[in-house]
Image (cartoon, rainbow, N blue to C red; front, side, top):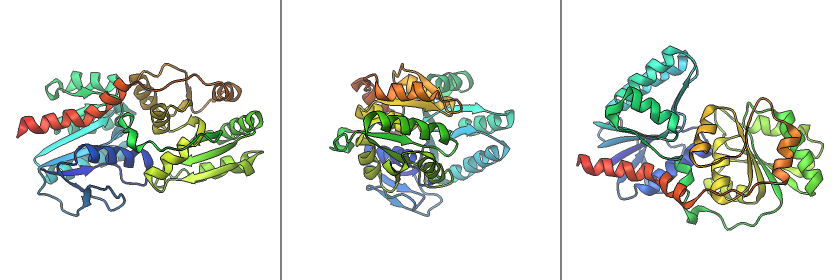
Length: 325
């Protein structure tokens, strides 16, 4: 079957990983991607605008609309996607929050045109069941929780603090946390830039390093390859996750973390996977409290059941394909 895999193509580590995991799960099919920005082993780049059996979008925040311009983009994308294939699906998404009715109306119109949907949190499932009960939407933990064992690097802990930064983060607070952690452990810090596109994390990473008193003990890691970023994360003894997928991956790999939420999606996705610890708000980080948590972390690793459930975004999609054939 010819499947067009679509998503967010803007040098974002988490989004690229979601697409890679989906492609691995669908490797018996003929897979294509509409962007040359990503190299997926078993998917080919195409410029074709039609002729596929199924269109599949793998997106986390694809249905979060922040402004009127975002609503216009959503309607434009819906029209474009309709030309690709007679059947369309979206997996591992969250729906909302919406800042205005225009954005919600655009999302509803788009969702009404889809044939199959999986979501990654209970709030989104409730929304689907309330507005589109005929879709029989499925809820499973974020697909990144399904990272297979063979993709987890065999890299030793180097007593490093990882900081998965985001452009809107409180850089001064993050710098102070890094300094206090280094003072207590005599370790170092890795400042991880997941996004190299429109949300480029590099400026925030540079500001943190320049603000730190121990800036010479901090290294900035830019996303180049999926394996490279996973290796960098595995070197860390603890992770301060300002990005959702930093928390998801460290939980999957058994690395202690402190979660920082800049959006409801972070809290929803982590709670869905059984994370019960405190989730800090990005705008008001209690520096000493977060530092203490990173120095004396609570052991947490997602269960095998969560890993299996996260893989069912693809499993349920494949069941849908079989039913329609």
